[in-house]
Image 1: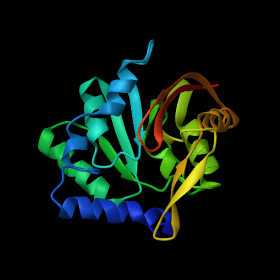
Image 2: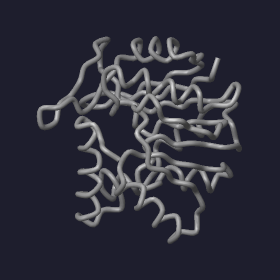
Image 3: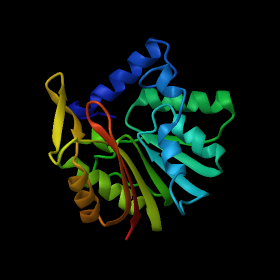
Image 4: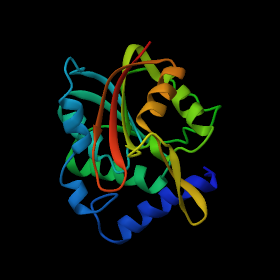
Amino acid sequence: MNMKQNYQVHEDMYVEAREAGWEGWGGNERMSKAVLVERFLELFKRPVQGKLLELGCGEGHHCRAFQKLGFEVAGIDISPTAIKWAKEKARATGVEGNYYLADLTVASLELTERYDVVIDGNCLHCIIGADRVIFLGHVYRSLSENGVFFVSSLCSKNEISYETYRDGSPYRHVTSESDLVVELEKAGFQVLHVSVYERETSNHITVYAIKA
């Protein structure tokens, strides 16, 4: 797969993580817990089973946690190294899951399966510019009727959205809370719950939405 230049950095960082001997993206401390999963479990009337897809699954850390909770899990990532790693860990741990290499910013991509839950595994803030519309379109079409989209994303500390850069290319889209809600509603989702978590630099946001 030929990656767009903006997104090649994610493959590079997974290669670096493996070479450093880490358990996954962000180092071993980050891999020691599954904050995204914990925040999903806090939700009232959340799904407790069904088919679940994680976008930006990396080496499968969250996927394995969801699989243990009883979901039928699949994961997608743009990084070949991440997908290979996820498959290796699935075999090593005996925790099943299907992992696929795909670029969700390619408009012609077809996701043939339908899912009850789609998890944004801190992937959406990696998607830049007009690619976000394509990405969210794939999410919408991949969900079953009334399916759940759970977003976990960087969030600005004020009402201004902005990009961060790495090696001269846009690297992260740090959205404001209001911009993200509008973006999701334009993509066809009904936003049911929003939580913002204060941090020193950018904040973090989770959004619980359904396919309207």
